[in-house]
Image 1 (cartoon, helix red, strand yellow):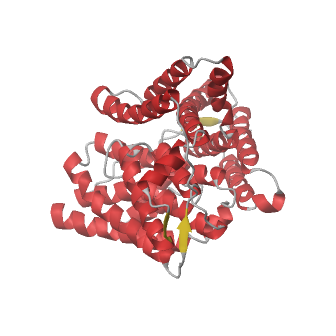
Image 2 (image 1 turned 120 degrees about the vertical axis):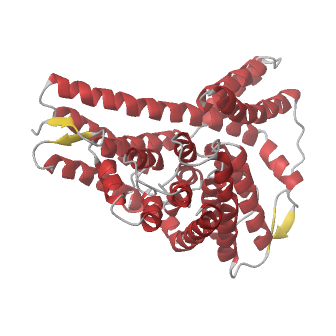
Image 3 (image 1 turned 180 degrees about the vertical axis):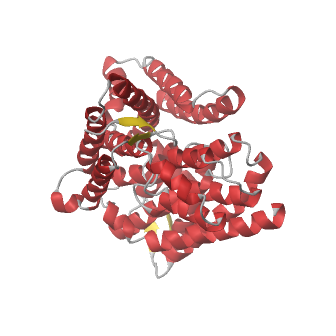
Length: 433
């Protein structure tokens, strides 16, 4: 078996012509195909991606010829598992809150107060777009996606319209956070590297909003009729209200603690979850106390397993130097075009390690190009269902949404992404060029 050594790009590479690298890339392609043809092979995508993700790392270990090489791979696996565990815990805590609020009908009640009970399909499309865009600028993408989907599902929509709304939510959520360091990890990474200033990032607000509106207009084309939501009168207990307050307070504290004290979002959300359970202990009956704790088991673990499989595969690609190769290729072209392609590539390769690889390559870019890259890697993942956390959550929550069914919206998503990217370049060059 070929020996592994540390590569110049920070990952692992083989000394014997890259045959193993090609095999591992082939496994990643097979994983993608298993997602694409899920409805044909009738095997849940969470199971296939987890299988291929685990197999790829097992092969990496078995390909190491010495103890030192095994230690190196073990270290890289530990780093990847730490990132995955952080995301898992964050998802688990967020989804538990949303599961409780959904079960109690609080999200539906909130929607009924915020939106008219009956409105035109076109108006709903724009309201959903604005809601998801603004919410994702305030809180994290996972929470914004879950709450926005709760809004969509509270209306009586046919399957095709629900899919359109879900695709719009993915794009709007990914667009909402690119102008704020608290809204998107890749934005924060580029900011911390010293390539853009806070005031310069605010330039991205308008292009992001315009691209979302453009997508909503395209989705509204030919759409007629009205839609309504079922009016349900519910009585909420003091515990329900307290947990809703804890949820929104946790969102606000997540942003504040991260900016002021550098507290990781996962720690704040887990703290909020612990407060939720403590408040649940104030309920008088043991049955209701148990029920509150059971909401953590209502989480669809297929979503978490799917994330695990995808991130294991992306981690493997990073460690064999694929992302470093992409970064080197990026430097060979005009940044105006390579930024656009890098954003589209983030729909296949997770945008965080891709951005890290691009930053490590230290390209010589002007401020307008850095802003264009920030927009691209933040929004480009919307082009495919597996390209962002929002897309993966939508695939798990909307039963009609599959990789293939999402593809029908890719042309419109590409147009909206291009509009936002070109607008970013024009504004950035006018202001900072």
